[in-house]
Length: 399
Ligand code: FES
Ligand SMILES: [Fe+2]
Image (cartoon, rainbow, N blue to C red; front, top):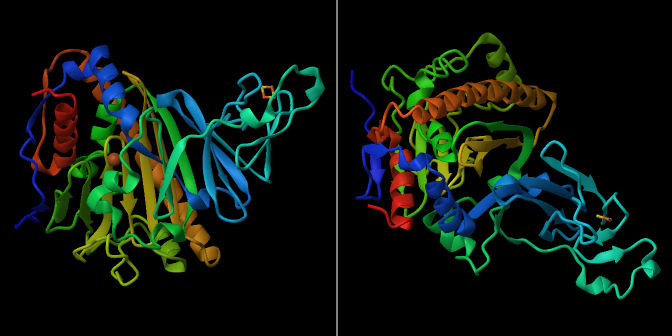
């Protein structure tokens, strides 16, 4: 049987098949990665559509021990602020489940009622005359550097002026016009796990595992001509990677899935053969049979681009052995109840799949912490893992 051959575009001479792990478990390595890489990177936080019009949303960002408010004005303006009240430091928008949102032009901190505008200005201080020398003009919410690319909001916590977002995205910045602005969030899954962020990223950086780990939740994804689910097209860029994932052209899915996807747009893992609505940056070679693309954004994000759906994944390091995983699932705006049913189905399925990933990665962490093995052996189908470690090594100026 002939295997699907992967076409690699771009080249990185630093890729290695053997990756040492001992150093990756140390506190020194973790601290250095946080300081030299995370402190300067851009992070995808939300789609503009996630924020209510004339409202706000707040997300916790555990890596930077902060929480970020995103506001969206009636005029479409989007702004980002630290979610920290200037009075005594409480979160202005409570994020008990990791996020919180609301509608309205004012944001009130419900500790003592200090109230801010969508532009971050401090508008109201109850009992203001009891304060001595309070200058409201100087006590607006503290801004967070943010930029928007193709309707996606990125933030950067660098103390110095960072590389502009489009430059940081490089070749990926073109070819997605209108695509993400059509997408609405249909579900979120957040979990904190006992694992190092690098090993967590590894677990989401290849399709090799899907044949085995997801054999029950996602059977039949591999076509008979491509049993190991090799990716037909891989673009390796300076920092980031894009790949196209092949579908099983004979995929039918279980009866309930077939029924639901017949009522609405086909979402993951159904196979869509009509590629006419895709922008140029998604399945750029128009390969068939096509399932979805993945963009791996260095250092800790992945965006899965499907025909009518998008999923985003962010791996936030909390400590060297603790990580938060945030997955957001999106689909094109529902037209009717059939689309809603299809969305509910895919949302449930994707959570089940992600739980399997989480269970595996805590076992990886335990295995590596045991000290029984020194190295990881990775194949060319695990190129994203090779690429990330190579880039980190070069940024840390290690061999
Ligand atoms: S801490 Fe926000 S009003 Fe007091
Ligand atoms: Fe997985």
